[in-house]
Amino acid sequence: MASKYGRQLTPNPLVFLWPYLIVSSVFFLYPLFNALLLAFQQTNGPVTKEWIGLKNFSFILTDPVFYKALKNTAIFAFFSIFLQLPISLGLAMLLNVAKSKAKGLFRLLIFSPQLVGPIFVGIMFSVMFTKRYGLVNKFFQELSGWGLEVDWLSNPHLAMPALVLIALWLYAGFNMIYFLAALQNVDESLKEAAAIDGAGKWQIFWHVTLPAIKPVTTFVVIMSTIGSFQLFELPYNLFPNQNFGPDNSGLTIVGYLYIKAFRNSDLGLGAAVGWILTFIIMAISLLQVRASGTLKET
Image (cartoon, rainbow, N blue to C red; front, side, top):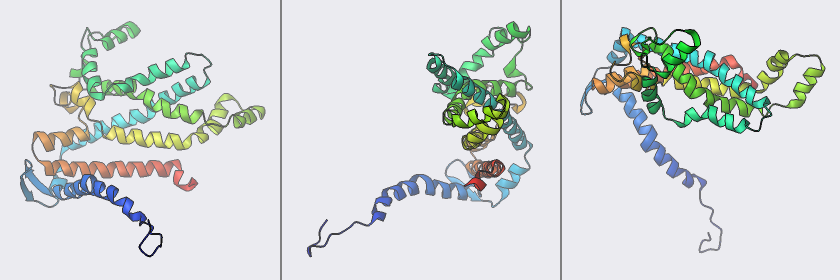
């Protein structure tokens, strides 16, 4: 672009940031600021508001139902990390060493549950866990002689195991893709050098493969933790008539937020739950990053 004096005019690069800044302000910064203010207010629907300070937070932190939801969410997150992720890594290792031409088909089949939304999965498994006629009950009956008469969704001791099994079927293939991509980028020469030095398969995995995929593993662990603490759709649709399971056995933190904000019409209390959840996720994620040593390596 030339001026009337013949000089070349260069547009300010900051001009190109304005569309992003405007969109971020409208759809992120304003809702974030509004949610922060809302957490200190008591509401009766979206219109009636009253400033109450820290009373929302004090109520939540003294509510035994919240701690039941926190416990359920923590249990689900524990099994998501220590059961689901090792299975995902094992599946990825099997597919990584397989020489079959059908490897792509197996990869698609294992990943395919992720193509179905969690809402549909919750409805589908509510039928599959049906007493006497459900496919899950029949599977356990054929496998061990137990399970045909078990009513999973009405038993407070089996509601969380049911959620863990569903999540294992739904997300193991999704996390497998990350691990598979990481394994395919491991330098084979390092494995060969370790084998020449006399290292066994387990030693090669522990001292060569695992350190090589450490960044991806850290990412998957953090994302699985965040996803676990945001669990809502599965229990909401799995227990449609039981208020998140018998005795709140399937109640999660986001489910607790939903009840307070939308069923009880107190959006301020729901906003306070959301901020508590945000700080919980931030604290756990920072601890995981610190424990992995990723910050030191960078």
